[in-house]
Length: 149
Image 1: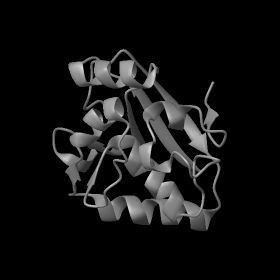
Image 2 (image 1 turned 90 degrees about the vertical axis):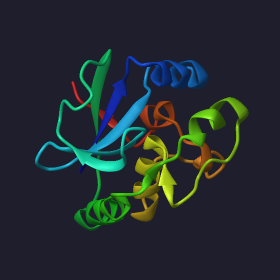
Image 3 (image 1 turned 135 degrees about the vertical axis):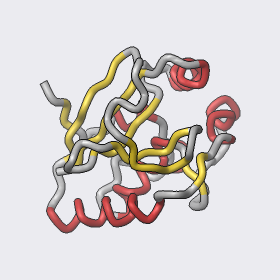
């Protein structure tokens, strides 16, 4: 089982993401077994951060993605290999201009999470059509996530 954290942030970039994607969610992270958060952010790129690093926020939710042990291991292998890579700032602009923003040398939060699941053979989307423009909203609406109550 992998855990994804969805966040509705407060800043200007969060607002632009939410407006541009018609969503209440502006950020996603993967949650480690010890409660830390692995994700891509403007301030530092791909890192593992302590829980609460981005307080205050408007709202957050956690979703589970059921996986076999080998697929979960593959998600984490890929995600950990990305630590230290930069943030894809042009991806935020890409939301407005509908460009294909996937680059493997820098990441936007939702494309990083989506790419980790693809690397494990468990894509979060049913279609390949949008895989190069996945947003936090797309992850939140994935048929493979299970919301915690």
